[in-house]
Image (cartoon, rainbow, N blue to C red; front, side, top):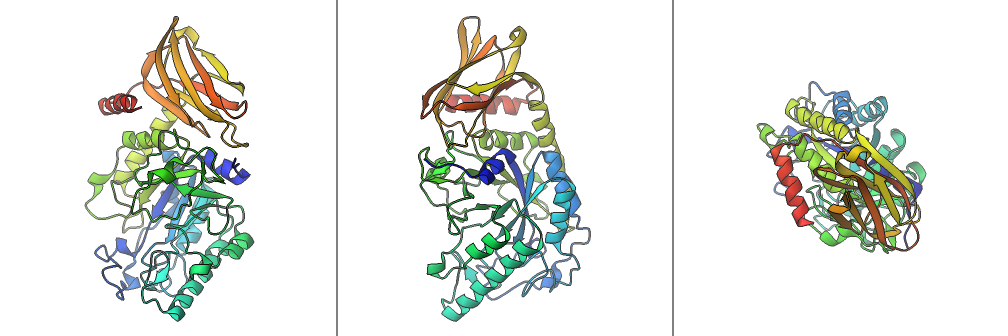
Length: 439
């Protein structure tokens, strides 16, 4: 049975991060590299006049995030640090945005990560899964040398990274891909890697299988499947994992905070998801043993727009309020637990965590709300993992009972708690009732 590394356990406990997309397409939105091979926007169009990475990270902090990932190079090939051949340097932009981002993360106690697409680079005429479109071997060598050089720059210049993000994975060396293992081991051996299994079996995280921010109802941190996906097609099997999988690679749920939009476009404030909807995504990711990675846009000024900030702050407020009023809590080793609810009070959240140092020991369990001698509500699931949240409309209960019916060894439950928040909008009530009927 697979077991996590200390870095993977630490990553899971971080629970909620943001990923910040910024590219030359913000300034030339009609550019599509796959439809315009050989054309590249003039780098001097990149002209954010109010760029403020402190504002970005302060907003992430207000939303409740604990880590942040900057897209240092997306698929156009334009880079946010001064490098060759296509970057802020050629744009005449004086700032090293990656350096500023890292400084802001340190300032606000947010753990930094970097995204770099090895699989696509419009400027170098390369596309998924990381090959130049001409097929020319010498051109492929030049592209791979560029990838290795730029990642050496990113991993060696800016200090320790919390997570390294490979969108679409990495083409293996024996298939013409970059040799990143020695570079990673030299400069960032403690960083967890999203879709980095080509580098090695340990310290990886996997794609949840969709870009809707929703983990399967039972989401295991172990898996037998590799995770080299570009996000263009959903895959529910890689999202589910399997409790006895050979690889420990917990799931990360990436989803944009603007409906279906990773990058800012003018006139699209209507697409900003509400704080309540963002909170719902939290329940469907973090609440199902996965991490939530929320996509945040930066506009042509170099700022997160106010429309987005309002809803991100609203999410942070909801997150704080819903988990600040703890009614009862216990923990320990065993297969049966009962929480006494003082005065038969109302509750609307139950949180469970298992100690995962030895893998998934819990394989099936039931949670019951007891009123008098009657079970008034019941929840059943198989996966528990780092965090499981059952969210329901407020109910009075005298006690809450946890019964673990399937297990490989007697587990240690590090948290069994319940909370009361109340005050739900009509839309939230409908979502809660609908979710209950589905599961």
